[in-house]
Image (tube, rainbow, N blue to C red; front, side, top):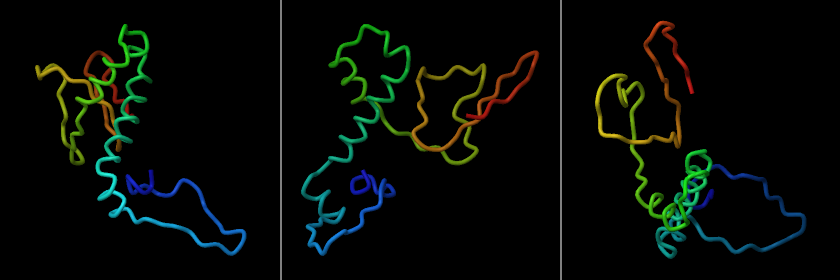
Length: 116
């Protein structure tokens, strides 16, 4: 994942003897392997969907889940950008937070704010 997504390394690797390694830098890897990064992301998206109770209990087979995963797209929002407003009609969509935080607010008798 560190090579493909440029994430921090998940472990430390230390030589315990003299050694020679083979290495491929990220740009070369992407040039040769193509869109492997998107395959890793789709696998992560699939796990995310299957972590939601609705998708666990729905009568969906592997091809249904695959079709849904293939239609997921990332949307970037800047800090303090309102994504949707309570009571306003917008096209129906389901959002999963891949990175960052959101604040959800609900108006009512007991006005409250929940930060996720």
